[in-house]
Length: 301
Image (tube, rainbow, N blue to C red):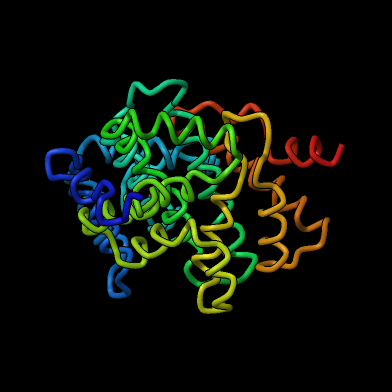
């Protein structure tokens, strides 16, 4: 019998040559977002020092997503109007999107992964706001990054992940559970390690690390509600799949965390669908072919 000690070490998989470097501007913005003594001009400095990011941010704030009647010309003005958290999330998304590789792995599609990440991030933030949590924007970032290590794992361990993918399809188990059985760690641990090595804020690292631990988080009560929002988002259906295998787990967890009426639940799903369809084109992503509302209608039928 294989012991955990004999299994593949995460540190061996993510050796220094494997890890991509996150742009310094994104790291600076994340670190600034954890401080209370900074203003728009402080956030503007790392953006203005990166001409590529500066152009992307200005296109972002001048898009139809915000619908300003006049063109926004300066980064400081953009931050004042849109908010530093929204700008930081956008910069983080761009940074991670640009450095994560696209592995040649069976049917895997990197854009589908980013579609899932975006929808889950929007959902986690929406649930956080419903619960009136102060860190709702941090939940967006935590959910956005929760699966970012998967492409690296597919690239570095293709044969082992091929067997995991086949087993997941055959048994209907969560990928994280199969990873734990095979390796002694899962993709949440891998993403947290990557975030830690990027020196991302500790709160983000913690949110990422716990996103596969839904039951444990619910058992911790109010203190873990933020992390539970991110974990709940991980149970949403994938944009590249026609069925929602974790629907019952999702509904049970959502009832415990939010206790929504059917009307509120449907409203939340519709809002997440609408925001996803507005946000996806800004990231050069296709709008998910199947909405969350569609999934619920099909399952109910």
